[in-house]
Image 1 (cartoon, one colour):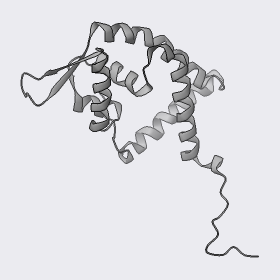
Image 2 (image 1 turned 30 degrees about the vertical axis):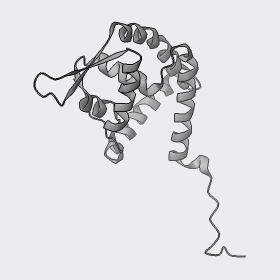
Image 3 (image 1 turned 30 degrees about the horizontal axis):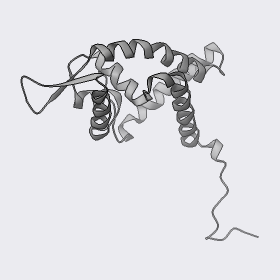
Amino acid sequence: MPPTADVAPTIDLEALPGFQVRRLHQIAVAIFLQEAADTGITPVQFGALQGIANQPGVDQRTLARSIGLDTSTLAGVIDRLESRALVQRSASPHDRRVRLLTLTPAGHALLAELVPAMQRAQLRILAPLPAAQRREFMRMLNTLVGANNEWSRAPSEPA
């Protein structure tokens, strides 16, 4: 019997790159949270902390672009980090509307503690692949992200 217009086609979800990327993201978040459980920091918060460490005094808008977050999401992330006394906001001397971000001493200490956990998480994510395939996977992943960056709700820009 031929399919009718009101019957959806059967599609193998595991053959869809978008489906698999979403699943890998879920797995990556879960692994990170396991490795960093004692810190209470999420992968997004880690990215913000590391982004600030990489560019002390960065403004929120620039940080958002460099880590691929929209500005309203980043504002909430910074609120949570600031409430834990990990990040400090200060007004720009050139434009009082602009908030500059720096890590506090507690933020630096926590980030130093987090880096080994983050590195273990990355190794666990890639562990099923042989070493040569890890490099190739990362090369291809960077190609896909770079080529499709413009389609993101929050395209990233190099720092």
